[in-house]
Length: 113
Length: 114
Image 1 (tube, rainbow over the protein chains, first blue to last red):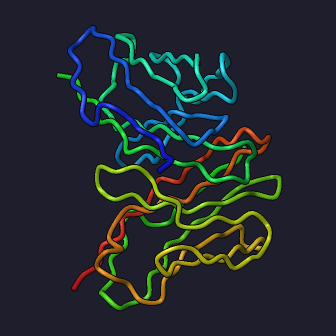
Image 2: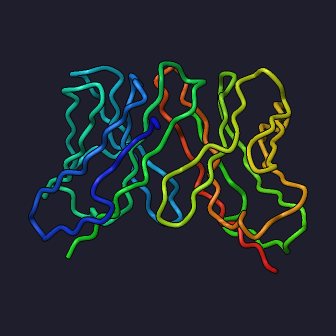
């Protein structure tokens, strides 16, 4: 079945450490997105990519980085510059166009220890 | 700028009662609107979407929503709540420009009491 796979499901980060969250899709979607979810704040966009080798900052990109070397993959790195990284991270993808729904992965819960 | 407001962060209903979750949007262009459901520690699943074809949209699990342009609303309803409906619900609008970016409301947690 087609879908989006995020890994790991749970991730623990030490202070000053970079960590990378994986997101892979086999839906043949062009666009991919990373959202951060905090309690009571809905989802906020971190980065998005509409085509391979191109990506744009979202509303809260500071302290994060991404790459899009393959259509299927859109990894997110949480750098040490992100001062409050504890959150639930969701990856999504869409086919082209604003009227198409986004498909979401199961999420990665990142905790700073 | 586009925005979404969900009225009520928590809604509690009895099993079998009507479910009404409120969503108001702000958009200068005809919007594409979505309702998603999230169960604990899971991703989001699409319930239904409005893309201007019909103002009353039917979704999965017996949910439906009505687009009212005059009220800038897209409220989600279900005639009879089931225990399995307990979850968090998000209303979202697709940002204009065909980027596919979604602007989400803050979410509403639905509690269903036996």
